[in-house]
Amino acid sequence: MEKVNTNLSQKRQDELHNIDPEYTDIASLSRLSMDEFDAIKSQIAQGKIEREKIQQNNLFIQDLLLKGLINESEQT
Image 1: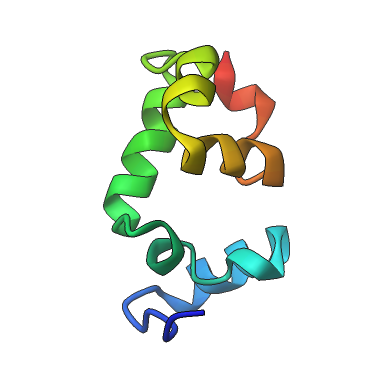
Image 2 (image 1 turned 60 degrees about the vertical axis):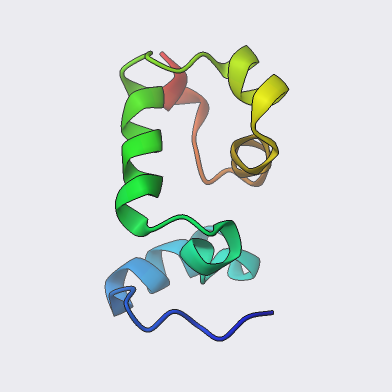
């Protein structure tokens, strides 16, 4: 695993670690900045990105769905 991204706030790291310890350093693992990650979550929550499209075209986001980092409630 890559070096932990020290740009993540401790609160954010704790939040992600509580969801799944494997994803404590989600920005580094995904090659996305936290802003990009949050923007994707926001688009999903607003219904701008459909789950089917995510599953077909973006394995990383699909993995987040499976790991529970993006909740089903954010799909509506």
